[in-house]
Amino acid sequence: MNENETIAQAAQRINPVRARRLLGIAAGVIALTAVVAGLWLAFRAPVDVVQGMADADSINVSTKITARVSRLLVREGDRVEAGELLFELDSPELEAKLAQSIAVLEAARAQSAKAEHGARDEEIIAAEANWRRAVAGADLARSTYRRVESLYSKGVMTRQQR
Figure: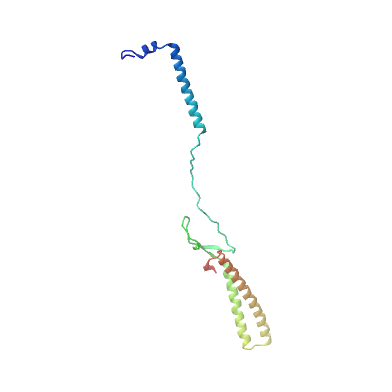
């Protein structure tokens, strides 16, 4: 092809049958490339894209006693260590049982002192009945203490609530 020769003139010099064949081959190569590219795109492994938030460890807490949370010592997102105090519980029922047990014990001590210093037969009988009641109250206090101590040793109750 000369510099003065145009593309149209060059095309006229090429044999029409040969030109069609070259055009058919070129079209076939293009079509085959498109099919191969389509199959490759269809069957390749997809890129794993994960979006969202990961939930951190969360722990449900429950108690073996009826109580209310009186003070929360940590906030959401705080790092905590094993054994760290997270909250304090307030149990009016346990406090009432403790006060009742102490009152029964004091009454038993007073009756015991009265019996030692001498009293009438009726007072002695009443004192003995009160003493038996006090022993039962002390047994209740001991069992309550053992139960609370067991709850503490299992990690259900804090040291302040014992």
